[in-house]
Length: 274
Image (tube, rainbow, N blue to C red; front, side, top):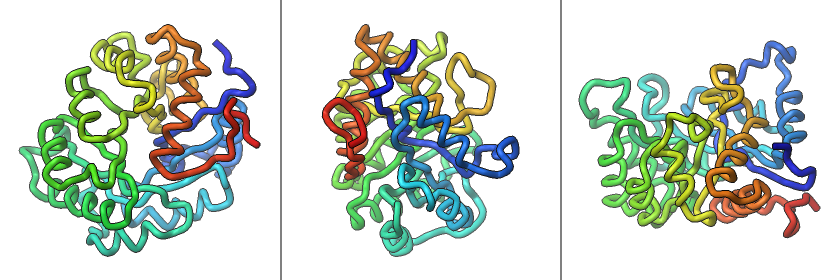
C-alpha cells in the first residue's frame, strides 16, 4: 500500500539523536527527507536524559518540522537528576512541547525501585505546573504506572501512553485516565495479538502512531534500524485492522497530535500543508 501524496502523518515519538547517521556523513537531513517523502509532516524527538538534551536540541534546531520533549527515561541511572523546577524551566525552551519520556520500567531492574517511582512523580508534577502533556513509558509495570498517574492527578496535564503493549482492557484504563494511546511498529507483528486487538478498538480520536526510532522497526523492516519514515507502515497496519482507508488513520492521528501537544502544523482539512 502506498501513501497518498496528500496524506500527512506524524511520528509522535522518535529518538533522532540515537539514529546512526554515519551512512549520511553525520547529517540528519537525509533521514528527514526520506520521512517527508513517505508523508511524514512532523516528528517529536523525545528526550531520555538531561546530559544528552543539549546535543539533541542542537541536532534538531534547524528543522521546523521537529519538536522535542524534556525528561529522563526510567532506565537512566546516571547523569543529572532534575527537580520539578528544573523540568518546568526547561519545558519553556524552544521546540519543547512535552515532559518525558517518563514512567516505570521494571524489565531491567530487580524489584520495584522507589527511585523510578519518585522520578515519575516529579515529572508528573512538572507537567501539571508547566501545563505540558506527559509522554509515559511503561514496561512490565502497568499497574504501578496507572496507580501513580491516578494518585498524582496526571489527568490535569494529560498525555500519551507511548508504545502501547497492553491488551484492550488495559487500553480502556489508560483512556479512562484521559490519556491517548500511541502504537509503534510492534502492532505490525503478527504475534502481537493483544496489541492488534487494542489498535482495532481504541477510538480513532484517542490514537497516535509512532516509530520509537531507532528501535522497534515495523514489518517489513523488522530487525533493522528504525526511522521516522517507517511510521507509515504502522498507520497502514492499523488501517487494515480496522478495515478503513489509511488516509483516515493519518488524518485522525495527525489531528490528535496537534490537539494533544498544542501545535498547529498548518494543515488544511485534507491533510495538505498550507
